[in-house]
Image (cartoon, rainbow, N blue to C red; front, side):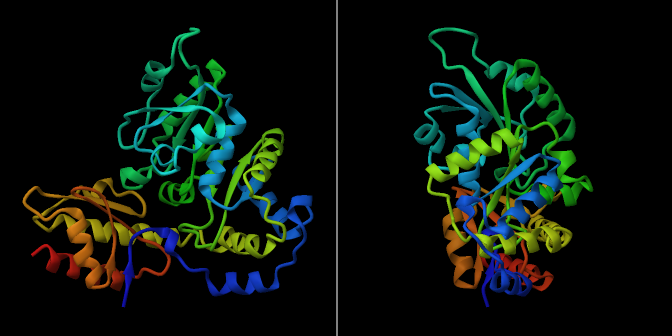
Length: 342
C-alpha cells in the first residue's frame, strides 16, 4: 500500500465528482457559452464577495495572469522570498509580463508593512518601480502557515494608500478559512485579485480560479486565451469544481487534524526538529539533525516502504495530508519514519 504524502495535488476526484463530470452540461467556454463553467465562476465570485471569476487550468496560470493584468514591463513585484510564485513558477513573470521579482524575507511567510516599505524603490529613472505586491495564504514553504489577519489588513491599507495593486496566491485559502473559522471573503478582503486552487485539498482533478472585479476579470480572460487557456467544453472539468466548493471544504479539518498527529509523532523522534504548534493546516515540514542522513536519502528509504514524501532541502522534508489519507495511514507512516531514522 502506498501512502502518498508528497502533496495534496495527488488527490483523486470523488465518486460524486466523477458522476457530475459524466453528466455535465457543456458549451464552448471561449464564447462564454459553457453553462457549467459559468455556474462555477458565478459561485466562486459570490463566495469570495467579488464581481467576477475566471476558471483557469492551473494555479500557476492564474498567478501569471494576475501579474500580467496588474503590471507593466520593467516593473518589480514585491513578494516573500520563499513564496510559490517566486520559487516554483519558472520565472513566469519575467517571461510573460516583462517584470522582475523583488523577494524579501518574511516571518513564517508573512511580510509586514515595514518590510514592504523598505523594498519599495524611490522614484528614479534608474530604478524599477513597484507594480504589484503579491502575498501567499496559506504559505507552502512555511508549513502551511496562515497569514496573520492584522498584517494582511495593514498591508492592504498601505498598498491602497500608495496606489499599488495587490494579489493573493490563495492556492490553499480554504485551509486557512477552515482553520480560523473565517470565511474566504473575509480572509481575502481588499486584494485586487485572488487565485485559489480546486485541485489541491478540494480534490478536483483540474483547475483553479481567479476572482476580482469585472473589469480585471475581463482583462484576465484575454490573457488566459493568449496563454492557451481557452478550454472549450470545459464544463466537464468545472462540474468537479462545483462539487469541490459545495462538498469538500468542511472536510479539510480532517487533514489538519492528521497533520497535527503527524507533527506530534515526528517531534518525538530524536533525529527530527519540528515545532508541532507551527503546523496550522495540512503541511508538515521538518528538519533532520546534522547527524541524521540527508533528506534525499531518507525520502528514498521511506519510498521503498511505501511512504512518499518530498525533500525540499538538504535536511528538510515536506509531507502533506489530504483527501484519501486516513488516521491509520498517518500512524503507519510514523512507524516507517521511526524505522528509517533508527
